[in-house]
Length: 431
Image (cartoon, rainbow, N blue to C red; front, side, top):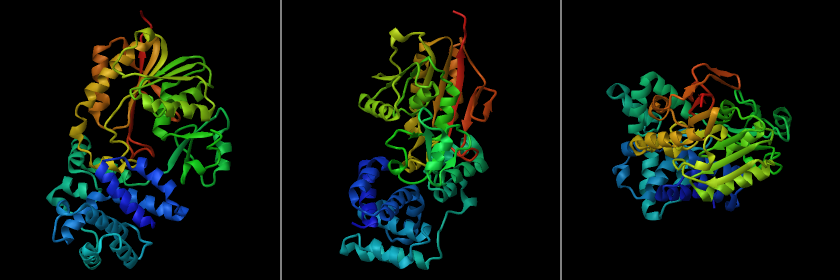
């Protein structure tokens, strides 16, 4: 199987089943038998076509006698795959991109696919809507983000800032590792992994590219994958050795791991999650890292565990969110309609109000999301504080960052991280 054929099959499968790409792609690549170079090409095609789908469909609608919505999935996928190579991959000759793509579709459809792709090569390049006729429509096509999401960003941030954020989402980020300092220092591990770079903000962060499992130290538990923003959230929580910490929505476990390492593997962490079937991810990850202070249990964050009332020194409430801060890593989210997340702020607030009951007098509560919209972030914290005067925002430091107001929004055009929100609150010491 060629890398284009694999990409063609996976793109159709992902659209049919509405699956996240990383779930299907990693398994398919490992089973493909392709060389490393071909695996890299297949992955680039799958992620690239998904990321640029709206931009590509706009070209199809301009070039084809039939709109995208009327095309068979096999034809639509082939056109997207071919156009992506023609527009965004300079190292692939146009004739190779066209011929290889045409060969993927049944013969009776190949003429149509061939004609559309060759029409693009004669048409003068990429075509976009006229900006002056509608900023939202222009940005939506130019950056391949659904129109409802583009409009929501414009309402929240304005035109200039929205385009800056979208431009940041267009960059392909490196993978960020959190170094397991129970076993090795960040500087020592950096020397062992070629071309790795020390993270700018996270004290234990290391930026790498390539297959994670093949990196030095994976099997020995010298690191785990965790975005720099998530690592800063762990720093904001500030767990100390000997404490009891609760992680309310913990899977896949990176914040629990980071806190355990901060605690020097001394104390206790209770990692909870709604989905019991995900808990083995935490347990196996902790075992690989040599962490022994984490225990797990299944629990809906809105369900109060009375036996844990006022028992925790620190509670992390990293709530389920819309995920609109991670578009660079999860390109499927570019096309998610924000209206699908309308109910989330109430769920988040309910989890936060339950989680706060676990915090002992004088303890710390951290609320975080991987989204950048105020109704899930600052507004939720404001609503919580209005109901809970026993809590107040507390200034904090995370790596070199200082947050005097107790709330921090990491926007991807300002920081080399996921879009992320962190709020640190302290419970009054009064009974």
